[in-house]
Amino acid sequence: MDFFLINTITIPLSQVALLLIAATAALLFGRTKLALLVCYLFTLYWGYFVNIDLLVMNESFSTDYRNLLTYFGFGFLIAILAGVGFFLTSD
Image (tube, rainbow, N blue to C red; front, side, top):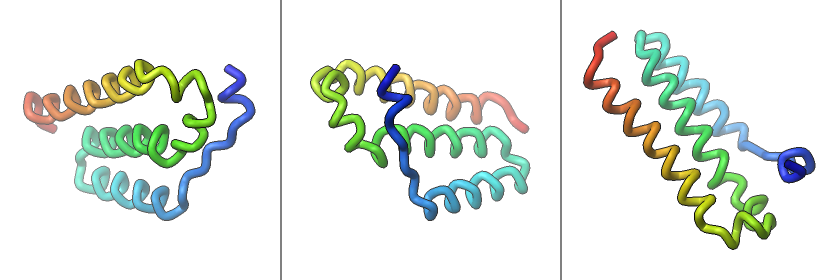
């Protein structure tokens, strides 16, 4: 728990602007599920790739690849289920 309390996660402003533009465009076109999926994928990306140095410094995370596989496993599973949900229902 200390890892979350002592570290500061940085997110580039250009990526935040890109997220806002993509989510706003999806919402303006009435695609709420797509906007949620875009927000989720940005969060997944920011949680690992942008702040990889914080995770590598944490020895318990960097030596145990099960955490990485669990993180991406659940992340991609949710993204796939959301994609399937796009095809099963219509807005």
